[in-house]
Each structure stands twice: as structure tokens, then as C-alpha cells.
Length: 270
Image 1 (tube, rainbow, N blue to C red):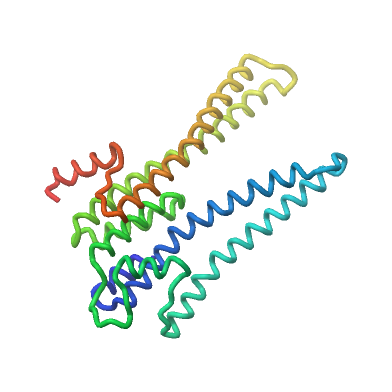
Image 2: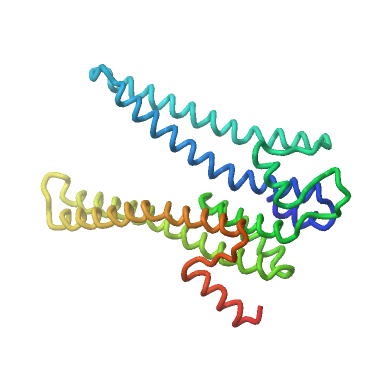
């Protein structure tokens, strides 16, 4: 994790600190952009391909071609996403002052990084805000995104109360969103299992009372699953908004969760 490297080097090397912060930004922002770009391309190419189908008799072959094209596109975008960190790693090994396209220069201005000046370190407040905001942005990365705020909270909470609170509320927020997502998945499969089990009792020959109940349970669970799947992206957007607000200098609090975490910290004397 880049946060580990940043925590170890933040007071020792501004070059190493900047490169770690830059890597953290690429992992969080880069993944978010990659997800959005992939979804947009897949949606528009799917619509274009379906509209362009002219021969209904060969629709199976054409749909297979669309699936192959999408798979190729996905692997291509994944290759592009992982190529940049490899290039960055090689450049750092060679002692180069590597900057990611667009991200690198903006981050350098934000944290006050200039390799040619004699300044000893970066702007501490902006370093903390960058780390915190990347934790907020990482909510879109299921499970893996939890590591960013968790690591920051473990390693830097004693030094900065701001970073401690923001990392902790982000951690709680991400855990809640993750549990909600997996709860939806569980309900979907549970409903399918109940449906198969109850219909299996009648041998699929006629609808029994048990089969009817199983069908109702399945549709209820399916409805809850759809609602959850539609709600989760809204929480992702909230995380992106929180990260943006932090970068702009605000002390952002998530609804409900922020107040509960703040109250908990005050009661514990933190």
C-alpha cells in the first residue's frame, strides 16, 4: 500500500512521499475513472451493436461477436490501467522524477512538491487531505478500498486528529456499504435457492402451495436485491463527493455516520 510508504518516508524524503501519494491517487482515482470509462464504452457499444443487427437469423453469432469484442476491450483497458504503474516503478528505480499524466503535475502543485527547490518536505495539511480524500474515493473498490482508510487510521491517527476522524468515518462508511452490497447478493441467491427447493418438491409438474410461497419469496428477495444494487452506486457517489470536499478544504461529515464517529471519539477522550 502506498500509504505505508508515505507514512515511513513523509518526514525523510519529499521525493518518496510524493511518489507514494501519487501512486495512491492513481490507484483510487485511476480505478474510478477506469470503471466509469469501461461502463460508458460497454453501454454505448452494446447499444450500437444491437441497433446494427440486421440479420435476425444470425443473431446468436452476432451476439457472440459482441461478447468477444467486449471481453477484448475489457482486457485492453485493464492492460492500459496496469501499464502505467509498471512504467512509474521502472522510472523510480532509475531515479527519474516520474509524474503520471495530468494527475502528477496537479498533485505536485497541491502538496507543494518541487524536486529542484531546497524545501525539506511537502505541505503537511495537503498531504493529510490527499490521503483522506483518496480513502473516500476508494469506496467504489469493493473490499480492497477499505485498506486505504484502515491503513491511514492505524499508522497516522496518533499524529493527526483530522486524519484519525476522517479515516475512521470513511472506514465505517465503506464497511456499511460493503455489507449492504453483499447482503443484496446473499438475498438474491437465498431467494433462488428457496425457489428451486420449493418447486423441486412438486417436480415442476404443477404449482403447489409450497412452490407458490417459494415464488413469492424469490420475487420479494429479487426486488430487495434490485433496490440495493440501485442504492449502492449512490453511496459511491457520496464517497466521491466527500473526497472532493476534503480536497477543497472542508471537514466533511457523512450523514449519521460522521456524527456517531465524532461522538464516539469525544466520549473516548480522543
